[in-house]
Image 1 (cartoon, helix red, strand yellow):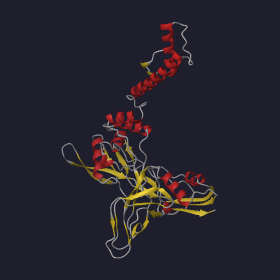
Image 2 (tube, one colour):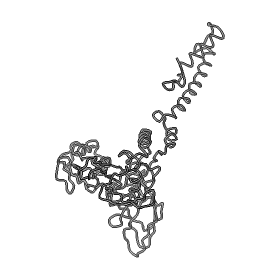
Image 3 (cartoon, rainbow, N blue to C red):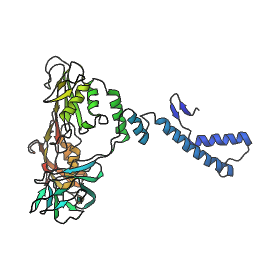
Image 4 (tube, rainbow, N blue to C red):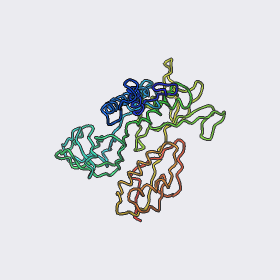
Length: 405
């Protein structure tokens, strides 16, 4: 059997292969009668030696696979992907942003809460948030003031509107914390599977003028950090000569951008011109762009060019259901958080399937869930909600009502 680099890949010597080879060499050198049993002194030496060599072969295989994105992992995959411009995305912490109207810090007159001051979810001392910038009450009376804060741990932690908080960093005159919106959930660092797929997409598509290439360039945050707020991209294309069913003129394409924060209101990409520039740099020559938004791109001659695209339209989902709560019920807040988390997985054009959301409470100590309704303005229908190709369903705990069954 051939070991090492072969025409079909790397064939690693296993511990048994190495031990057999060492024992065979000893018998060849010292005679067939030499005792290489595991209990013999030479056999024990052979075992230790073979074990060390087996580890060396494992390292050789790892190094060999470092050149193959399908087999490389961990740091080697990170380095390999970076050679072609794909960076492993790090973990991001959940952020809480308030408007100072119904959500914010409750401060007595003249009180300042410094950046870095901490507060935590009531009953969850592990879920701690740090104030991003100092918050001051310049008046002489108590009032609520807007703030933003970042969780001290990363990952997709769901914080729903109306969460109860406790102050961790005592500040005289700081008497309360209120959040009127769900927090913008963070994310975990890219897994090997996610990084491997993104590298393949970007490498095979970047620089072309196909629909897939345009999408890949818009999602190439490593080379275009100004686009990092984009959640997803959908591209509609009309290769015919007349207006199609989606309203696109003949021989045109429309980029539908979803860059909304979890609140479904705030755009995360600061300038629409950044989006327009990426589309212009990738689009085919002579093919028109379509969409409801017009932004400016600069061509190779320095001339401004109008580029059309569309932002996805957020469709807030209002939901209600009655629950029969069991003895191990996780609580209304946990059920709402689970529904919001599941809803955040939907992308543009994904329909809202009734049975999917009605069944979520059943894993949180609910015995039965009935009378499920949902809708765009109020919960009025039990049927699936159809989401258009330019729309995305958005979920907020304040739009979820849980009754008693």
